Length: 102
Image 1 (cartoon, rainbow, N blue to C red):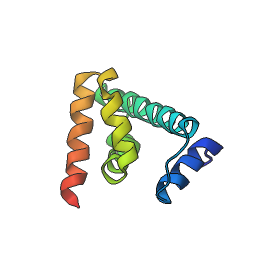
Image 2 (cartoon, rainbow, N blue to C red):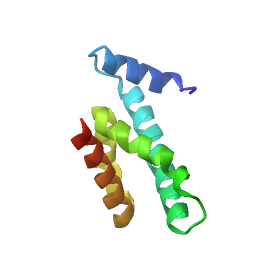
Image 3 (cartoon, rainbow, N blue to C red):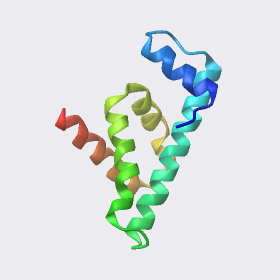
């Protein structure tokens, strides 16, 4: 995946135990918001029968990343209020499933 420098540097800073800059944190948050909005879109297309179950792979990987990486979960918890309740419930259930698997 190609990442914009601010997102790449955010991830590198977090992995090194450093505090990212505000610009890096904003870029990361925006990227994660886009990812969650895309997951919501796929979820609803699946619910409508437009996509098959295989299409849920991306949203499930996103839920897994929210379980494994604190920064991803922070963005989800801060921004999930902008998503419809049924998608939030589904995503939270998937995150909890990955939490319980570890």
